[in-house]
Image (cartoon, rainbow, N blue to C red; front, side, top):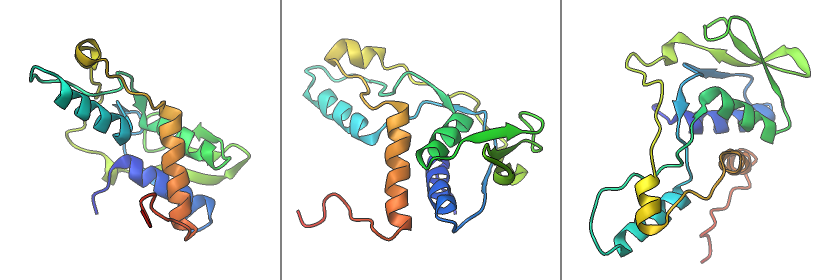
Length: 166
């Protein structure tokens, strides 16, 4: 099943924190991405539609974070600090619980490396900011926290979509 890496990370962190799973398996944890919140992008699309002149725009945060950073922030949401040990940037590198280094939480698995991996994906939202004042409002840490908290609700069986009964 193909899943976005962020979904895989947040779901796995929730499942690991609830003792359902033991370890998260990933490919290139040093790939850099420009991650933003759908809520911000929908607002940007709406603002684009209100603009008098049609044009092409890039909606992005304009900042990058590695998969490694995403993993660290996600585990921090559940109170776990990741310590990276082993040969950095190789399949021998692992992420362990900093409070119990015998507890391996992240492993690098070659099957998850993409043959055509793009190391850096970064958008430039300057034109959208200039032409209609749009910029991403959600901070990276808040995006990760929100995703992990929602996955924790699902894993614990208490998930209720915000639009329920509306």
